[in-house]
Image (cartoon, rainbow, N blue to C red; front, side, top):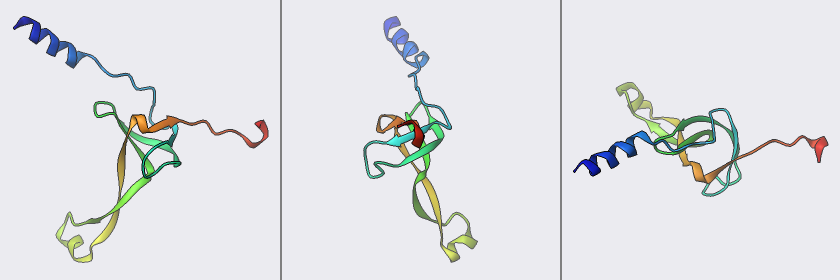
Length: 96
């Protein structure tokens, strides 16, 4: 029983290291948005997800009764798994 508690405690204490930070330039390497280069706007380390501004879908906003009548489209950022993006450095045209 003590061994099980110790294992659970260690799982809670360990964090997965993420080399990316908010504001880093990344390129999407797999999925529907492959080839998109954008800056990271938000990261969720526990879920290992990143959010990019260019990777978004449109959804009808029906959160309030006034908006239900007009049915306005709202852009929602889609989460991408960290393994589907890679760090990208913009190369200057003169350095090639």
